[in-house]
Amino acid sequence: MLARQRVRAAWLFLLPTLVVLAGVAGWPLLRTFWFAFTNASLASGEQPEFVGLENFVVVMEDPDWWRSVRNTFLFTGVSVTLETVLGMIIALTLNSRFRGRGVLRAAVLVPWAIPTVVSAKMWGWMFHDVYGVINEVLMHFGVISGPIAWTVDPNLSMVAIIAVDVWKTTPFMTLLLLAALQMLPDELYEAARLDGANPVLVFFQITLPLIRGPMLVAIIFRVLDALRVFDLFYVLTSNSAESMSMAVYARQQMFEFQDLGLGAAAATLLFGLIALFTIIYMVLGRNSVIQEAA
Amino acid sequence: MSPALTWLKRIAFGLLVVVITVYTLFPFYWAVVSSLKQGSALFEVEAWPRNPAWQNYSAVFTEQPFGRNLFNSVMVAGSVVLVSLFLAVTAAFALARIRFRGRTPLMLMILAVSMFPQIAVLSGMFELIRALGLYNTLPALTLSYMLFTLPFTVWVLTTFMRELPKELEEAAVVDGATPWVICMHVFLPLLRPALVTTGLLAFIAAWNEFIFALTFTMDQEARTVPVAIALMSGASQYELPWGLIMAASVIVTVPLIALVLIFQRSIVSGLMAGAVKG
View 1 (tube, rainbow over the protein chains, first blue to last red):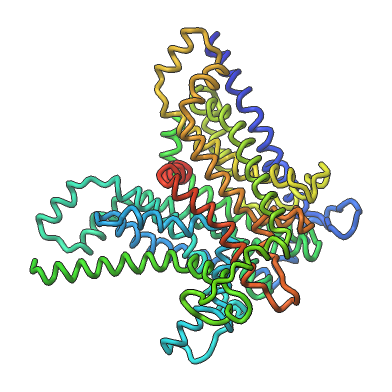
View 2: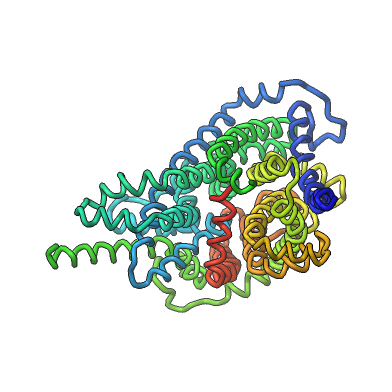
């Protein structure tokens, strides 16, 4: 009796949250899927008509879409790799004992606290072709002979976008890796030190295998985030066709070209991609989730 | 090991620490420096402006509706935090303390929602917001931000709520307390630190949000701070007011940095609960 009462209470307690989630996630997602198969447009006030797979065909035939796919994957691959390597170096540094460790740990959090748009603007200014400090420094050291238009040239703007993302999200990687490092038992390292093992060897043969699990979860988490990137591309390259991410492409179709159906088709494709990675993430992190739920 | 080698190692390590610190802090430092420059001084690269110009900080409020934008951001982020926490406390109680069928799938579903790309719900949400008559208003943002704050707060609070001792609850049940009383009067007070952490993280996420705020508002007066900064323009299309943009950036960032530094420890544990344990 009491148990049944508690189960009923559980559902009552969950009801408001489930209603809100259905309203802001479930319903809009279904509508987006539906729009993807219609000629819905912001320009016309008419009821959208079902057009089958037409939008998907148009998207698939658009070279700009494929460029945005390439950009998104390049961005994700390079940024997440750099963030993992840099995050590991900083986490290992923070994991050793030295004076001022607390200060460094706080400093490392600063980029994470800065809004993405603000980071993009700050770096956009540093990358400014004529007055930017980065060109100035590179010219001072003779790396380049004249100023470079970082955010205008599509090849270079990718460098700039990745630089901002790496700067902004490495702290997150650092935190997750540091947490994993701190859970490793000291005894292992005592033994290695007594044997006089080389620190690089110790890292690759002891540390890395032991933190592989948490590291993988952190990497997939970052991949999921990177695939849906919008702000950085939008703010740094002001919407140029050569340097768009998939999310920027989808939004441009929807709201600038007012073709809701086409944009929804692109958004649906991106959603499918992210859903795939989410499933991988859940399978990898499954043990911990089930442990939590048990 | 020879003393020379030990010293060499120490110097190398110190150098590494310095490089990390400079890399992390330089962009923010440069924003501060640039925000204190005006006119042609902006175009000279120097470590600290000779005559710091504070005018940018007042100009951003007089030449732009930036005060209004700040107010919008505070209102939206504040209301998002309050609503999400209120909804999440009861949901987390149910998920953490009551055994019922369908709990695990439900938790996985909530986790899945937290992975949604915002672009995937953008057109459907746009339609919903227009149908509700909320377009170009702040409640539109509060509502749409629930997409990412609610799954997150539920998830993290569930993690925290699960760690509270069972005995407390049992004692309350013996006293005849209903689940509502247990949740609100026994557990809620114990969850204060967790509420601060999750609330702060949700606040930061809402404060930083860009794509919904860009799409669901139209007027300069309705914009939140990130959109205002992203769209700030000068007298002509080709002349961006960099001094103003940097001043606005610093204004927006300083409170966040302060909050993060003050709550450093709890923020780190909150991020862990939200990411790794998932």
